[in-house]
Image (cartoon, rainbow, N blue to C red; front, top):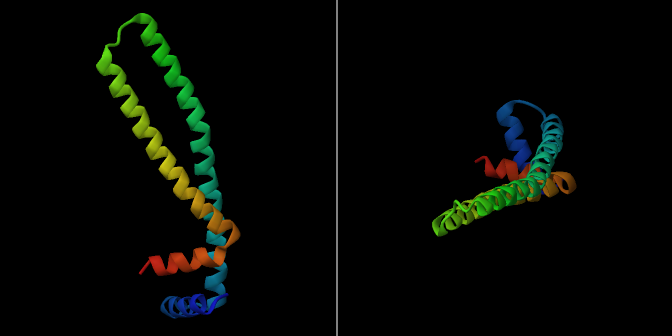
Length: 118
């Protein structure tokens, strides 16, 4: 445990009226839970990408064969799809970085959570 982390944990433990060891153990357990949660989110995002792409291709093919779309429809569809993919990708990417920190460097994750909560 680094000196900065030790100081932050000591201050927080005094405020919560618990020992530093108990607080540190609880934060390590929380890091594992966050890692599991983030891995589920990342997995779902990367599963939804191909499924959504397949569904969109199917809808486009049906509309094109029916000849019911004009030029504006394609632009609106493309913009909407791009925006949704960008939003999903950003969520997955943010969770991926936190997942790596929780898994491989829980001390950094604990410190970032303590400093970020002030």
